[in-house]
View 1 (tube, rainbow, N blue to C red):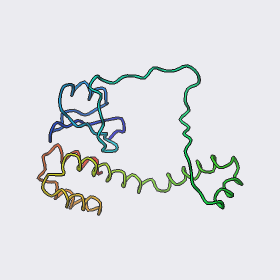
View 2 (cartoon, rainbow, N blue to C red):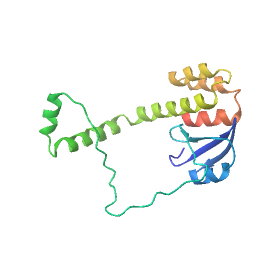
View 3 (spheres, rainbow, N blue to C red):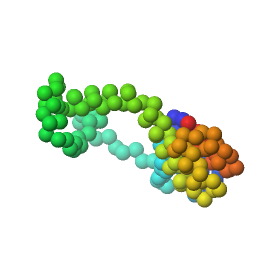
Length: 163
């Protein structure tokens, strides 16, 4: 599923899927839940439609975000000795960790996305708790068996998110 796509449900039925602008147009005036196809999170829509924030003057933002990092003194000492300083060393460490844990991270993110969606729409369906246990146990056959009798749109979307 694309990270730029969303899916809208009205009750237990999928009514639209695609970019957010298309979803907003398709569901105007309806009571729906819209999910991010990458994360499974519910997306809040502005009933007035999307409003593009005006672009300000000056240099565009580069996406750099300053946040607090708490480390032990020996960690700060090691970072200070690295070429380029702490920021460069931390970026390199994060990049290496992302490369090394790629498949495990994708699997965890897929399971969490399916869990979020299922919690929002399928929590009252039969076999919900057993399906969640099978999902996190990595039991694909058990997961499929426990959601087999669910409404097709819910079953298919949960399966797509989990894979």
